[in-house]
Image (cartoon, rainbow, N blue to C red; front, side):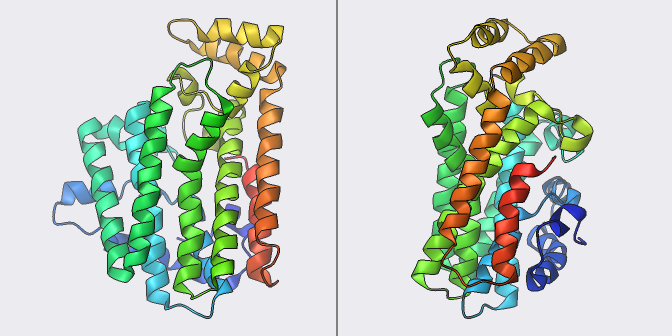
Length: 329
C-alpha cells in the first residue's frame, strides 16, 4: 500500500513510512490459508487498506529505543492491525452493518456465520504471530483482546439505554479502541528495547490518543456523509448504541434533551427520525462537546510524550493527535 494522502498529513518520519509501504506483503503472508474461501473472507477488509494507524504507531514508538529487527517490527505490526480488523468483523455482525471502508461487509455479502468465522481466524493468526516473535507481546495482546471483549459486552448491555453514564462510555472506549492503540505503542517500544519510562509514556500516549480517536469518531458518525466516512452513518444510533455526542446531549437538563429522548423512545427510527434526533443532538451541544473532549484527550496524549527526545518521530506523534480530531473520515 502506498502512503495515502491522509497519512502524508501527519507522518513525516521516513523509516515508518518505508515500513508501512512494506506491510501489505506481510499481511498477505500472515493470512495464508489452505481454504481459499476463508482466506478470501479474512482478507476482505485488509485489501481495502484503512488508516493503518496502529502499525504506524508501532513503527514510530520503535524510534525511541536502541533498535529493533525490521522483520519483527513488520510481523508484529501486521498482527496488531489484524487484531483490529478481526474486531471489526465481529463488530459488523453485532451492529448488522452493511458497509465498511466503502465496501459491503462480509456479513452483508456472505452471512453472519462466515463473517464471525473469518474474524476468529484473523484473531488466531494474529496471536500466533505475536507468540512466535515474543511471548510477552502475546500476553499483552491477549489482555487487550480481553479488554476489547469486555468493552463489546458492556456496550451491548447498554443498548437503548437513555441513562447510560458517561463514565461507562469512557470505560467502553478505553477497552474497545484505546487498548489496541496502547498495545501498538508499547509493542513498538518494547521491540526496540526502549527504557521502561519511554514504554510507559508511549503507552499512556496511545491510550489517550485512542480515546481522542473514539470521541472524534462518534462525532463523525453524526456529521459525516457516507461517501466520506466509508460506512453508513447513523448505524450506531439505529442499533441503540449511543455515542458520545448523543450521551452528552441526553445528560443536559434542557428542552432539546427532552425532545431527543422522545425521538429515541420511538420503536424504530426512520431516516427522518434519525435526522431529527441529530438536530436535537446538535442543538443540545453534543457535537461540539464531543469534539472538545477529543481535543482534551489529544492534549493529554502530547503531555505523556513531552519527555521523549525531539525529532521527526516525535513530531509525527504530535501531528497525529491533531489529525485524529480534525479528520473527516
